[in-house]
Length: 560
Image 1: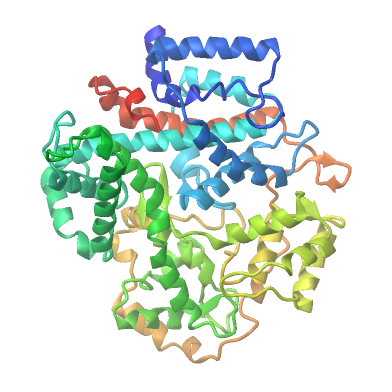
Image 2: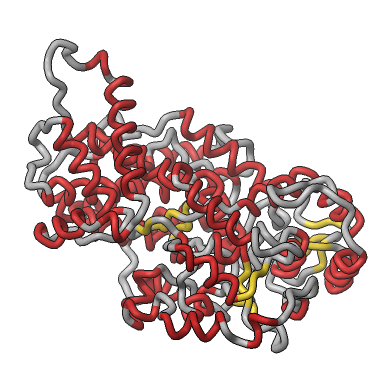
């Protein structure tokens, strides 16, 4: 039994020693310790497990924890809570999605946006697998106290982020092998750059990680697969220079610098964290092109105009109508206007994710999250009256929309939402997200009813239907460019028919001001979070099994 606990605990324990994060299950402020004897006993028990498995000296820096907390705390404060001041599992899932989207530009598997169907990619796999006993025990201890505290939410961020960073070590291990270097071997700067490029291709661009010959072919043709590769290679070169400068005091200034696996792992993790932010200029170019053919600011462009943008040689705007429909990007609500591409759904859609790893996709920055954060800063509550919402929203501007007095139709729609809920507008439900989309139609994606769309990366879609199904062929493009819909004038009413009174709340609680039914019970919360978190644990174990068993350096050497 001790051996099995060690095997399961190893990837978890690199983060469990975060100054006693797991025992902090009270509702007190972050980093405020609960003096209860039970908490102290559990902390001592947990620390014993850490020492037994890994030895002393494992920690996560206080600065990093404070940075996570500074982002998570405002999100947490705005979410609906039960009578204990705790949030439910769906709210926790929403908080994690928001954190990783705002800070990293990631869509993390298992924490996808509201309405996404993720059963095939995460939950289903977990249900078909055996839940590791140790992970189950940890989750039940921490997550079964009637909802989730801010401590729990920060802890969840830490474990998911740490597992993602640790998974990058396995990808780096593959990159060394593909370049025919041992991880124990010091390498030159040229070789280090080649290894890092291999890491980027394998980890971010879904390249082959096991076949050396296929990888060499992928590397040779990477410019055709990813047109911005030259810029990415320069970015990696800059990261190596920056890392070399920061660690200049630890090397001999009179000798040629050689790089070790620890250096490669550190740079790779920095690259993973910064890649989405650095490459977001590509997304801004995509949005600017679409906005240029949306003169009425409806957040929609005719499919014919969408394909017309690709005629100048652009490598974007080529997705087939079938793939656009699968992603939830097409507005087909008007028979007279025909199919139209919704700008924010396209820009932040999976087809424009720059890279995809086993745990997350690195995607375009979602500007709507910033707008939502601004709104939450004004309201400071999970729900508000229509008047309060209007006052707050009319003070917010986006990159394409100045702050303004909202139109009568938008006011009427908001009143409709408030009436639907008996006088209050919940800020974390589908109806509000739908209204926010029409307020900021170029920044905030239209929220589809759960289960009606199933977003997939290009790789996932092509595996199902073949690579030819991804891009529109010449015949399909010609058909849309010359259709009757292409001749119909654009309309300020585009998208209006998409409005529906179908609500999906993140959470419901019995509060005197918030009449949304019964609270979600403890077992429901435990199940959902167990599914999401254990997905990372089990997948991480699979990816790192060979790395751990081979006796490579333990996680103490790569602690962030």
